[in-house]
Amino acid sequence: MKWYLRLLEAIPLDVYVMAPSCVPSCRFEKGAGVLGVKELTWLRGHKRVIGLGEMMDIGGVLGRKKPVMRKIDLFAGKPVDGHAPMLSGEALRSYIAAGIHSDHETTTLVESREKLTLGIHLFLRQGSVSKDLDTSLPLIKKSYLPQLSLCTDDLAVRDLFERGHLDLLVRRLVRAGLPLARALRLATVSPAHYFNLSDRKGLDLGRKADLVIFEDPEDINVRMTIKNGRVVYRGEKRLLRGHALTKAPPSRMKIARFSLDDLRQKAKGHTVHVIRVREGALLAEHRVAEARIGDGYLLPDADLDIIYAYAFDRYRGEKQYGFGFVQGFSLRGGAIGTTYAHDSHNLIIVGDNLIDIFAVLTGLTEKNGGMALSRHGRLIEHIPMPFYGIISDRDGREFMRKEKRMDEALKRMGVMLTNPFFQMSFLSLPVIPALRLTTRGLFDVTRQRHIGVNDE
Image 1: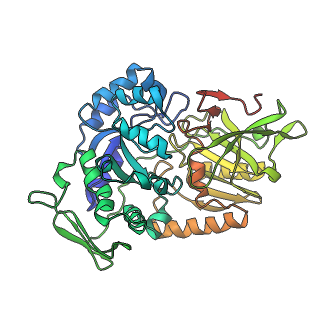
Image 2: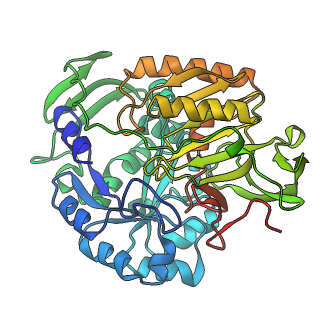
Image 3: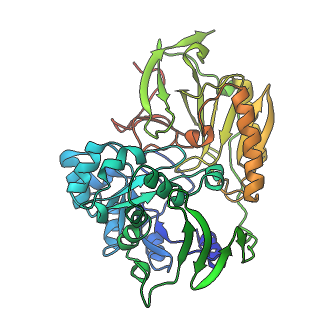
């Protein structure tokens, strides 16, 4: 984190950070380490840290657990972001009363209106996976404007380059009939007010001279960008040279050695629990399907689009791993894996056969992380992420070229999801309903407990 914060000093862009409140996201998963009050106290004093990031430990908040409440108290007077998908009624009121100020996980109008009524600041999300902006359109009226802002919350490199960032969201709102000034407010004044950025809430003497000049409200074609009163971009030309990434401290993965046989799962019942993913949504369904069994072992079911999913610890070399089934990838004849996997970023692999899954496991172990695709038992694509297994050292365009080759290969393997790697990266996040996969196994988010893949 210190390394990342230092990188921000060399770019003509103000990047502010909300200190991570839940590392790990909850007590049911393991990551690289723990961020406690001591670490957050250091972060709170950093000039780029302006609040406490999304409080995902809903159980800890509702139970008023001391470690959780101490974190919230530490950031008194600063914004504290929430993370409350599908929370409502008395539980929601208790969650907000603990000191939570915002939410970005709202996906329905009913849910949105309840949270707005209770004073929550809503971030309307349109990212690479979760796309909630169209559903939120009826909310964007004068009475709610001070409580609304825009956000992307996970945007793929390709989407950023080809479609845009908040400019894309503003463009979408204007084309839907929203007045330009109202749409722009959601990307400027409202978030500046929420995050207490009082030096840039509008155009006035003494305010920061951070300006974007564009033409055509429906296209947002940027002509010039001014940062701190200095022109940094004009006419499709960047006027400041970029800086090379500062070398990060060494970070090697510690993954236990597994054989192909270690990955086989003996059947212990006649049904299996399945994580069902859907295009355009982070919420995953919890389904139960009839088990397909061969020689006493659990098998994928191509007819039902049910394939294997694995989660391997990459920090301690633990021999235990998480196993489950996932539906919705339509993957045939291969496997994909990534160490960019929210929130603990362990190694996640999905595939329809063990040979390719084993190839991804051994390949990413040897290459110290990244994103990889295997077919016919051989790694055919790899995007390196040498910085902690989550950040690539490749130029954006080179990254996109590699990602495009990977997407083309996946399409040939039947995958229809727009962003399969992003979708896969959320499989291991045990704070979004309804069923997830951690290194300890399948996790029922609703009942807050791990379950066996064959549990009746």
